[in-house]
Every structure is written in C-alpha cells, then in structure tokens.
Length: 520
Image (cartoon, rainbow, N blue to C red):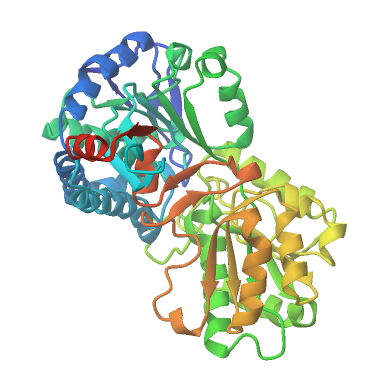
C-alpha cells in the first residue's frame, strides 16, 4: 500500500510510524497510508523563510507569473493520471474530477496571465495618489509589498487540487512561499500533483512544501509575517484560532468555512420566463448532485414562492429521479459516493435532524448501495430533497449544513424583502443565487441581501445559454462570505494576491513619491 510522502526542507519525507489509512469511498478498500511523523515543523518554516521567500521576492510579478504558467501546464499535461487518482480517493465521476483538476490548472493559468498587467517589480500600486496639503508638497500613495514570511495553506477534502492551486497561485504571485497541507482523506491526488511540480523543477527551492498528515506544532512557530489560509469547518477554524502563537503573533488568517447557500426563484406575476425557469432547475439540480453535494458553494436552501412550491417540487423530483448513484468507474454513473465514512455518518445524522421539522420529498436520508460497487460497500448517499412548511418553523434548515447531496425547499411570500430575510437567517452565505427576469425585483433583492452574502449570481434569460452555474468559484471574482462563512476572501484577481501583501501609505513630495513608485 502506498505511503504518502511530504516534501519538506528540500527533500521527500516518508513517515514510518503514526500511519493512518485512507480509503476508496466506492469500495472501502484501503488505498494509502498517511503520517507526518518525524517532521521538524520549525525547520519547515525556516526553510520557507530563508530559501523560498528571498528567491520569490527577487523575481518580478511577470517572472512569478511564468512559474504559475509552468505549474498549470504540468497539471494539464498529467490530467488523466490525476483524474484517475481523484476517482480512487474522492469517488468523483469524470466531470466532477475535472471540476477539481481543470479548475486548478485554469486558475493557475489565469493568475499567470494576470501577472502581465503589472508593470512594477515586486510592489503593487493601489489606487491613485492623493494630495494631502494645500499644494503637492505633501502627496500620498498606497502601495503593497509581500510579507516576508510563509503562506500556510490548510485545504479541505472536497477539492484537493483546486484548493491547492487557487491558494498557491495567489501566494506565489505575491512573492510568498507556500506550505500546503491537503486533507488526509483525499491527499493521494494532492500529493501527486505537488510531486509532478517538484519533479519538473519549475519552482525555486523552498517556495513550495507539502505536508501529508498532521501539521503538528507548525502553527506554534508562526510569526507576524506569516499568513494562514484555511478552508474547512467553522469548528476547526475556531480551534486553529485558539493556538497561542496565532493569537499572540497575529499572522493574517483567512477562513472560508460553512455556508447554507440559497437559490431564490423570483416572485411576482410573470417574473420568471421559461428560459430562466429552466436555468433555475438545471442549476439547482447540478448544485445538489455535483461532487455529491460536497461543495462549499452548493445550494442548501431553495426559496420558492409559496404558490409555486408544488410545481417546483415536482420538477426537481423528476430531475433527481434520473440521477444514477454509484462507483464512478462505471461511465453511466452520474454521482459518486461521499468521500469518507465520517461524511456519510454526518449526512445521515444531518437529514435526520432536518426531518424533525421538514418532510422528505425525495430520497431516504440513509446510506444506499451504489451501482457497480459490492452490496453494502461504499459511502453512497442518494440525492435527498426536503421541504418545510415555512422558514421560521424549521430553524435547523438555516443552521445545519448537511455536506452532501441534500437541499430543502423553503416557501416565501414572493417579495424581495422576505427572501432576503430568510437568506439572512443562516448568518452569512458564500453565494446567493436569484432567478428572475424582473430587473426591479432583482434590484430590490440585491440591495437587501447584499450584506448577508459574498457573491450574488443573477440567473436570467440573457445568460441562460452560457451560465457557469452558481457553484463555480471563478478566479476573476472574490470567493468568500461574511459571518458563519469565516469572513475571509480568496481569488478575485489582484484581491486574492493582496491577502499576502502588506499595505503601506507612502507620504512625501509628489515628485519624490512618484519617483519611488517607479522603482518598486
């Protein structure tokens, strides 16, 4: 059985104790063992600080962008191998695996291209200069420079390659070395992706390190010039924040956590045309089933005007009835298993909790057998749709995220104000999607729901043929959200890069400030 390695301090490290197994979620066969035992985490951080950081900061943005372009080519050139590993360790279908692998390559390529828009060397100008006195004798300008520490990336199990790629793209472009830690359950594919990049020799030594297994006492060594970017549960984020070094040294800490995202079917007479209605159904069905619902951007609450609930319920049930759940090695399968036994148990318990105040309209909320897998084996959980009678009588719908192919229909009165109120009950979402061809209705909803969400996806007739779906976190736009989502922000073009940079206000005579700007 393969023992996953870590890449630290310029060499590969294979642990010989503390090993824990990972499993193929379609068959429950053990496929790898993982441990970080024996790693000196203080040395890992020093290696990033002393080797990787100086090497990256000596390069221009364009030169660092070229590194990202090389990384993208490597992932794309080994796409089939990575897709096969994804199927083994994540249980992904071909399209779901591609969502992860191609997403990583595409995001790296995007940031490689973005680097060409900067004419500076290592610093970034931000905004226009401003006159601070009666004359230009005192002038001000904001600039950003990379932190002189390391970026520690702790990624979730559901996107082992995209999670690595999107975080690494921003940090490396900023000029910060990366220490990446994939979730243990799906580390098999992340390890291989990093191994391919290291073997190609495209990055300066120390600029990328990999930890498979626990991060040990790594966080206890962090200082104020380091950055943590975490994706996972709000409970784990709270635990990480409680590490003494994190609270005392106060490194920048970006969190992307839980989210009970909402899809809103527009209200009002004739507000939703046929094309927009079809887009709504197509998007919602995709968001329930893609990656078996194991996405932070998946739709968990489906808001529908009360007088249209029955019609929408029938349409969604008809769509879910066509979904085949099983081993993704079978090309006829549409949806694979959940990633781990723990995820399956959590989904079962979650639906049981929701069903106390909601009725199940499709599915069982229990483990199922999967097409192409042995009976009784695999972490299969068929799509499950619930419905509640009203938003306020089902509080669990707004507080409990079931991280699987599960969503709940929620009636509302059709007004933007009521839809926004219900969305806000979750305490913050990564994405809220609305479907309407009524501009005034959509405008009112956006103004009301804006403070409760990180991204608003507006589905309408004009975009129906090219809509990417509300669940796609694109590198051009910010990914993050308020409240329970963690309050962080990733991606969004240069906004994602700025996470790894310190903003300074430069003051002086205009000619001096502008001359200094030209040399950054």
